[in-house]
Length: 192
Image 1 (cartoon, rainbow, N blue to C red):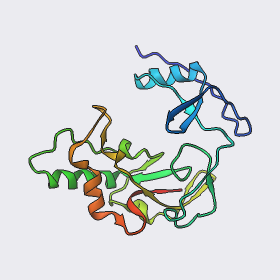
Image 2 (cartoon, one colour):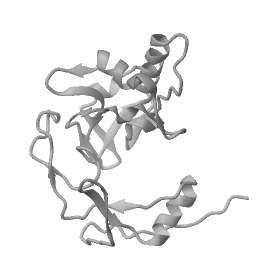
Image 3 (cartoon, rainbow, N blue to C red):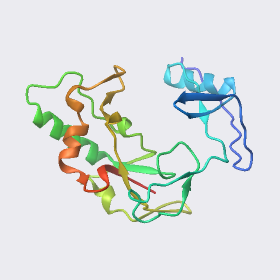
Image 4 (tube, rainbow, N blue to C red):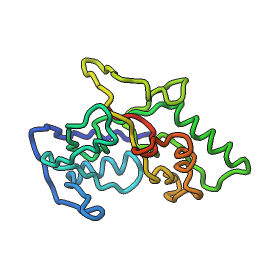
């Protein structure tokens, strides 16, 4: 029988709950959540987890070349360039189909999943890249406005099941073949 563990976290934005600072990679790091939070996430995903959060005083300027509509804001969390990153399920399917077509004999360790793109929200659509056309979205009383496309790096070629990278830089190289915007980069998903 499944075990249910309730987690309560204080997410008051006015509080800067800082634990031990953990440097993850070359100055990128965060403040460790309490052990009960790390344990809860570890149980939830069946992997050892150290949950980190950014300091509420952390402010990083947004990339004005990447964000078409909102060039003045700053990011205050670990999200790439906005609070919400949205992709469409049909976009992921389209990319997976293109990779399979490119390698009819198969590609070892091939992995194309919405998880690879680290979105907050996956919208179930019939049309690939429909998210490119969303300007405003409403969730309850919250209005989200598009602030530009998500610029991708080759991290998307990581197979999350085997914890290894896919050969031939896939799906990044296929995506770059049809979703590169000159002067901006390889695009997949939208920021809100």
